[in-house]
Length: 381
Length: 234
Image (cartoon, rainbow over all chains, first blue to last red):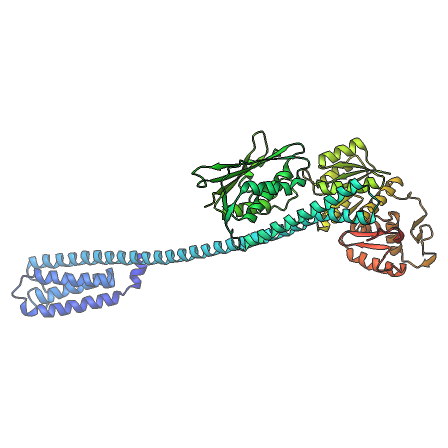
């Protein structure tokens, strides 16, 4: 490799330059040649070999060394202007000069060659490095693109899941309403008690539809980023009592037990949003509570710490509970519990509301089995 | 009076169906999960099962498969899903019919009547029946002759076979695949465009009223031949 590059260098230029320098130097030293020892021109002539070696490589150095030795003989060895050598010591000087010039010239040439090769390697490496950087940048760009695509796909999936759950959720209460209403209109004459029960079913299912629509509206507001609580002092005990009364129909099979202390601090929050949290938690508990079990709603003031002095609300059911690995994910939208008939947005809304209030929501295991949802909200100013 | 098992996890649907069925003199049995349904089919021997496909503990189709392993009790599937695939799957797995939520009580009762009638007749007319009648449509299988209200109708062999297959199961939905395999042969199954062409020709020849057709299209699922006089009010 080094040889090929040396061939590619300029050996003629080196030899020419060396020869020219030899001629010029010799010419310049002619007037003073009798006043100096031959060692001075010899050393200066070696320099020309060095220059030729650096510029043109080893071959130039060899040519220049021979030219310099000849010039040394012609100009500085008596008798001048001939190739003749009289003194034996002049032979030695000439031989030593040629040998030294050759060795130094070749060494310098090789050194220069090595430097050039190293520079070329460095340039190659730099190009390679730049190419790798370009590839890395391209890869990063592709990864980013892939990330964007997967986000879009996720959004699409969520949208499809929303449509599926909306159509399922809306149709279930609608089925009951339609079947009952048409049957009351066209069907057999029912006795009063059955009739009352059927009408109550229609009302309950209509309320359920209303709750589903409210949840869907909230979900769309949350997704649009337009979900700001308008804060006021909220009496959570009153809110829970009111909502429990309205949702009594959900607790036909399971029992609802509300136990809130009278001295609960006021909460700094949006009444209707917090109402939705309580509604969704109660509806969720009613859905999973086995017949004959109890759903317990409790609350207590919490000291300085987690939520800086506020209220902790607990809704505990005795159902199948939430497995450990599912606990963080139950608050993601469109995530239904095992075999659940819910839209999977209720708990996501709870989390969005509680987060917007600067609170915390989590799910734990009810002692003895079941799920306990814990909501911590900051106290009112 | 029939013993009807209703399987649904929605309390409101169960209340509505129990009241509706009992008011019409039927006995309503209720189940809220797949396991409970399978147990009640085995223990209480209902005459017909109304099965919701979305159950909390297992897929309704699996419940159907488990029941079909040892029982031929008629099953009418309730489905809230928009996808026709689930309906076709349920019919292929041995369901007798389906009703899509939201449904009317009259519609469900009409399907239950058809299912009960098939059970009473042992699953269609005897194979050697020589005459099939659905309302005013009469098919003489021996002579390959069809009449509508006594008026002779000229049918091609394929049209006759199509109509005869539907007429063996009056009021009951038959899937595209079932019809294609019966009329065209076992290597067919996806050529629903044939069915559209033949159904349209048959409606013309039967002089079907588009408002009250005898040959009813169940979009994405199949066809059924009904007696318009027995049709439930919409």
